[in-house]
Length: 77
Picture 1: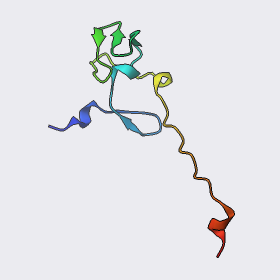
Picture 2: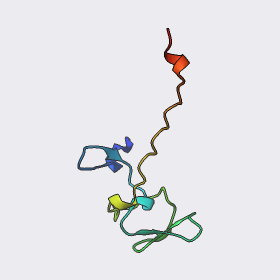
Picture 3: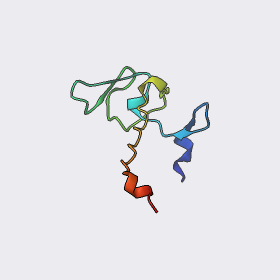
Picture 4: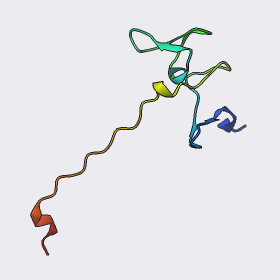
């Protein structure tokens, strides 16, 4: 059985797995080890249920990589 049936689509056609940490109904717990869900109670951040509704505000974008510092000697032939 494939796990692709759990994936949802964004408007830009990127696929993502549903997770309680990205759900509209989930709130992070004070210790950040769990998610407090309005529908299901205390859940793990990576778990999900059939009430999952994606909240794009909760997504953390990837950080930009820093470019290495080059010296003028690096470009000398």
